[in-house]
Length: 142
Image (tube, rainbow, N blue to C red; front, side, top):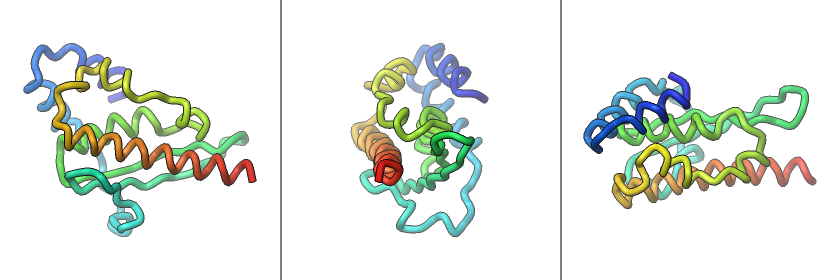
């Protein structure tokens, strides 16, 4: 399922229960990470659930592109992780740093429905992605 289809599905749900059920199912589709990637270095701090994020770098002849893979011990968080990874993966560091995630979550109707702890976790996840992009950007400019 592509990102546009995920956004469309979430926007069409009439109630929060259906949205969260969809997030749960989306989380079930997120593939597991290799066991060795479940380490402290990949752990995202600030989340109430356990969340891990691995950043991958690829070169397509131009500027490096960042991609992400992650996992969580919560299926709903895994669903949110799927969306965040879908938004940020496959972009250059400068694109990631310029992207404002707030409108994305407002557009899919999750702005007010998620618990504050879960919202803090999403912010921590996005901050981690932005940090990785900033670190890469700084490395490239040195």
